[in-house]
Image 1: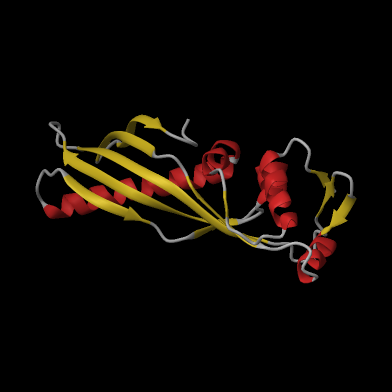
Image 2: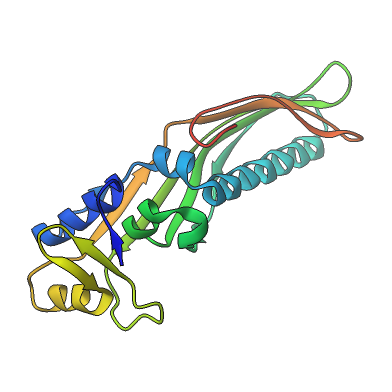
Length: 197
């Protein structure tokens, strides 16, 4: 069992579940990106892929640009892992889906390579629920109640004493600038925003 004390996001989400309103609850995606390294790494890899794709598209145009392309990625599943993601976000959401939107501008540089500037936001969505009968038999320690396992939490919702709800959120903008040379690849000059290093 994991206690929720000191796990702000997990505590917030459990409290909302027990309040039984069923209203959607916004999540702190900036904190997700800053706290869950596997998540920020996956988002960064996707951003680098979008930069390569934009440069390929600009190269195919045959001119020097600048060319601006919209960004809207498919929803991708981040599968939670307690050991790697930490207790807070693992118990706050477990697994969640994410997508990115924004735009990227690329232009031909004086040396024949390409320069780029990309701004994206990372979006997340998930359903807060307890499935019951999970192989891992998850559970939490709730203050003044004690240890409650996955099946008992699922039963609270089935009995109408707690209510599942939609979690959603969007990060602050992530901005990346740099250049691309066919021989050197990407050379990132700056990166700012949640999850960047």
